Image (cartoon, rainbow, N blue to C red; front, side, top):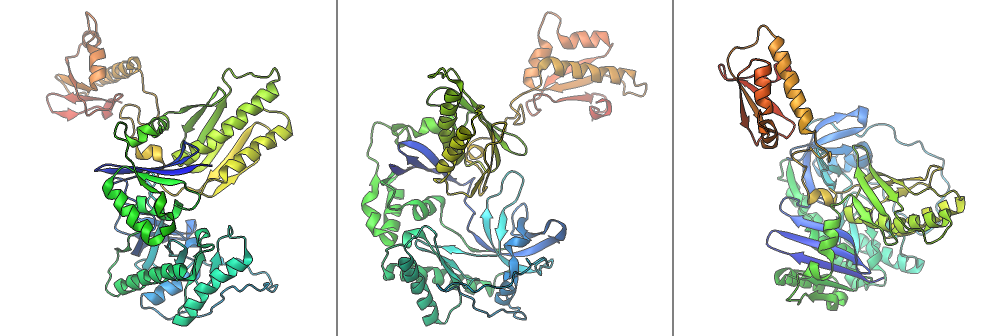
Length: 526
């Protein structure tokens, strides 16, 4: 599979596209409005603790308090208190894992008592999820510092390695590098060894470890004088983090169209991954914009559409509800075989590949339900399920996939980390409020007339002229015809009504104002 990282940059925005075999699979956008906050470390203050939902809310200085679930605190709260000056309960036990078979232990009950969090308490937290909608960020006290080869865990004491490193001897070598460094310095910390560390020299691993440890020492120094809420550590930009996390041997090249950004990436790669330096290229196409040249611009535009065409005919319909995303598979006119089951299977398999691509590209998270075309053979149902499973192996997000039900439905839960791409490049429709439909002008006129009827029946109503304010499009409708709708209403109910357009109103809204008192009387008769 040919994999490329293509980066378009302008004065206000960087767009990072990941392509697989020439097709857009992931898109990251970096600008001032959507600044990356995942990975940032804060000294916060506990705003409130709610045992009923097993969570606390942390003041980080944002509009909404951060959400901290009890499972993201654990027993580390004692280490945090110690770091902040309260060393009454410090656990110095080092239970670092070794490569010896673990002894059988009596099963222990899962800790049910909530962590010792109190309102007003200082706490160090790290952002794990971007704010989504009206929800604040999600945080954890299990702080980590990601590097090129390692993830540094200051409040842990275990050294683990990526499961993708299969060679046990290599895994043991890498663990020993970290352990020997830790023992030589007399330190206590944990680490996760990343996949890219495999076959790397000891020197490269140690340099990365030393750098991460140095960053943590600086954070500890800041804590002495810090007053919450305070930002202790700012993670890398979106662009640099993509290069750090995704630019590996399996990437064929990185193409950048900005000289400034090219120099930055070139310098970063030269220090951290010099063996990949020859894969970083400056785009030299003068006649065509970078994203246009690779067909990326058209694919980004496609993400704004609910309807996605399939290779063999048919299409997907992707819709968002309040609780989940729903994806409907439609067969279209495809009928290569006379056998309906065979045609349905081929369409479903093609749809499976496109669905996973669209989920990754749009960065959909939460619950996703897919309504496939009906197949009746259980073997065919399993083929569709296996195809989805295979495609999701490319996805870096945590995904849970349930087998196809008897009704042809597949339920997926996918880790939600950040605002999805579609939301980052769109805004809510001011007319429909995001529903995709608007109230008809006829119905709005009917509601206005019903309001007038109620007003007319009220004996205590204000006297004098009424001013009716409506959206410009409704204003046009009310003024249409030889005898306008508003004139008919005025005569019908013997009222003096002056019509005025107001662009600040939503399409379906209207306001009645008493001219005599300048009072808005709309709600009184609605």
